[in-house]
Image 1 (tube, rainbow, N blue to C red):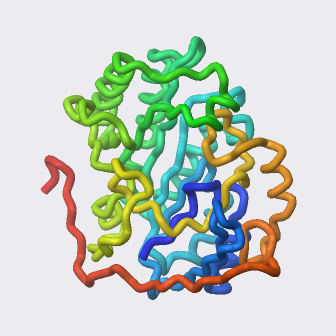
Image 2 (spheres, rainbow, N blue to C red; image 1 turned 90 degrees about the vertical axis):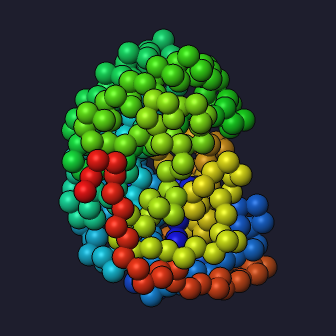
Length: 315
């Protein structure tokens, strides 16, 4: 099975000590985001957890102790954009994150690390030419350290519009320009461009729209094939990615990005982060009197077959 850590918060950047404590203890508790008294208990054993999936803007806090999770299969998304502190106030400088990306890739391998360049939006400051220029400079530095980059255009969720009122949708014409140029740049640097939940029309520019964390992507990362249950579906109908079993919690990420969909408001985030205890089985807080705990039925999805997947042109 798969354990996800990054759909709701950034555990590597802010809660790495807690995560390694959970690995040591061998289990984790997570609350249903919509019914907090419903608690799921997951076992964290490499015998049943085939892949640990991370999504982060700063993997550095995890790197010194990576040997503690070396028995697990891993897949990492690292988001690196060209935005400044006006958009991503608490994200480390991009050069630092790219250096950490390279270190991470050397530990887990290029197939197990994916670069995310998203969300993409256009403004007076962050123009089409700006994106193309900085995407190429980043692709040049990350070339050889990853084989995949995932792009997506900003979705105007209610939270996003409230926190980022000046943002607008990216027009189809702008999407075409970005897809064409990013596809060209990716080909130059050996990085396949994937689009997350975007139009199939982007395929004509060499963009892979099959998904960003699909069964095949994870199999390539861990070098084994997976027998994924049919019941394991994405939370979005148009998405082929395996996004369930997330142990994070909304309103707990300290990056304070203005486009964030996982944080409702900054004040709630600050309050929640104060309740974090690295020794607790919960990311935030502890047990409650009315908690209803359910132990999740877990089993390995490995089918014992080695996975040999080649990109187009490889032999």
